[in-house]
Amino acid sequence: MESKNLQFLQKLEALPEEVSAFLYSKELENYMSDISKKFGLNIEVVNDFLLEFFINDFNFLKTEELIKSQISNQNFFNELYCDFLGNIILPIAPFLNIDVEKEIKNKGGNLNEYNLNIEVFNEIVNDKNFEGLLEVSKNLDKFTDIKEEERMSLYFLEKDLVQILKSKDPSSAKKINGSILYILSKNPELAAKFSRAFLANQEKLTKNLLIINNKKEEPTIANWINSFIKENGSDNFSNIALAKFLTSSVNCLSLDEFERRLVRKIIRLYRNLSFFPDSMTNIPPEDWEIIPVDKDHLFSEKPLGSKDRDSKLKEGLDDKKVEQEMEKILSEDEQKIKELELMLEKYPNKSLERKAIENELKKIKK
Image 1 (cartoon, helix red, strand yellow):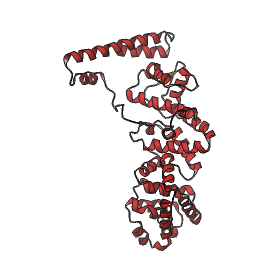
Image 2 (cartoon, rainbow, N blue to C red; image 1 turned 120 degrees about the vertical axis):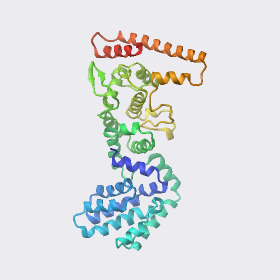
Image 3 (cartoon, helix red, strand yellow; image 1 turned 60 degrees about the vertical axis):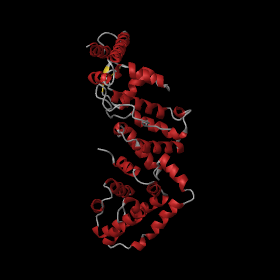
Image 4 (spheres, rainbow, N blue to C red; image 1 turned 135 degrees about the horizontal axis):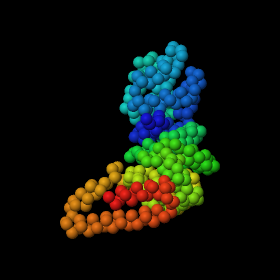
């Protein structure tokens, strides 16, 4: 199940930039702080009201239930509910296609108390620096509280990364990249803290067990990075080294194309983060990223099996071309066999690495 923060970011991505500008503003932070103090609620609880409101598609009834569950004195419910809607939701209501004014009236609220918030919103979006604010918001996607940004970024890097890597929708990765890059622009020394969180990630990335130091290990993100470092060292590395690892490492032999893509992503993420900012050398700032974002769809969701591969070759090709393509495939298999046989010489008999290579050879020779 996706975390609340990630679901909120996905909802926000689909809305106009004016909504983001308001939700990232100092004024919104002040409104939430005022509600927290007025009703004796933790600021995290008030923040949760906002997250849930977006996640539940702006459902008033569910918001009522959530707020009621968080207060001991129900006599304050209407006032708290109206303050939440009037201070935080009313200014952006036209962009959400919901009638907040009617809901406030139904709960006995006085709209005149909240009309000033609409004027504040208009000042924010009409500010002479609004275009710059939107650009920062778009590229950095920062929350108003840098500590909250840091906490959320650490959480995703250590606990909730695989679903982002697997997602076809790049918006979540872009949001988190914006947050991390914003933080690093303010506090570059935090790169080490982010890197430690990432290197401790125990989420499983692929199906099969890994072999590290002749021991079978779970295919977690942390262990995949350990496997790469074991074979390539802990210094910065080139794309050539990455490509070689993906094609010749024992642990990569059984990967399908989708898994290979995931492994490529986490190794690039390791480089982007652990060697930041050197990892961004010669890259335009607008293209900086920590979590790799797919620029296209070069990789299919389903790996092309041998039967599919043969049928694809025959579609629209004459017999001679089919024969040439099949010879090319056979030649590639022969080359792969030679490479694997050379790899066998690197490992002692009965080692797990040698056994994995032998199994892969059997598959190709069938």
